[in-house]
Image (cartoon, rainbow, N blue to C red; front, side):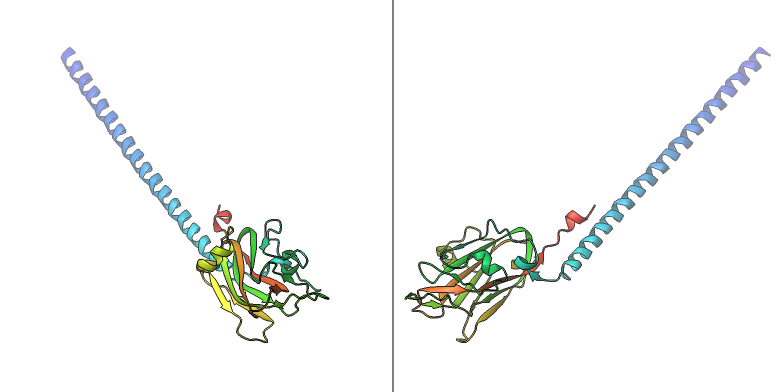
Length: 238
């Protein structure tokens, strides 16, 4: 009888071990299933975030193309007036800020030592430019003066060349350039297209030649820079 009891006891222990093993196996399988589900959910969430990021990027880029271009000096605060400047400008006539503004009195920005001018416009934020419009219909009047003033003939536009000087302006390739061929023209619009005029930090306008080769000085009555603030989708994506 003692032997049978011992045999039953051993058998029970074996059954208990087997059941314990089955429980452990079931627990492990459940853990793996849950782990795979969590991994799948994480990957799915990451994919969703990537899709949302791409969709937002496309939406912002598309929205950027719908921006209304404005006169950056008159209608926005994008131009850094403290850092913008003109090289070879005559202090006796209009300042750069006056001709960048509305300039209702038609004052003239005038060159000094010769007919060349470099206008440097610095932006506070990255900016997209669509056109540069120049007006030159009212030369300065000086009683008793013998200086000869002329409107621009050859004009070059550069981008992100804050340190541009006159030597560089004649040597390096501009982002855009034009020649005023019409002797009666009083204004000019330079269309700025392509990536060269996107997300700019600064813009430089170089009056290379005056219309009259005998002129001592060139002049501009108005500089209108048309564009808008560049979209920054990273700042909008959260």
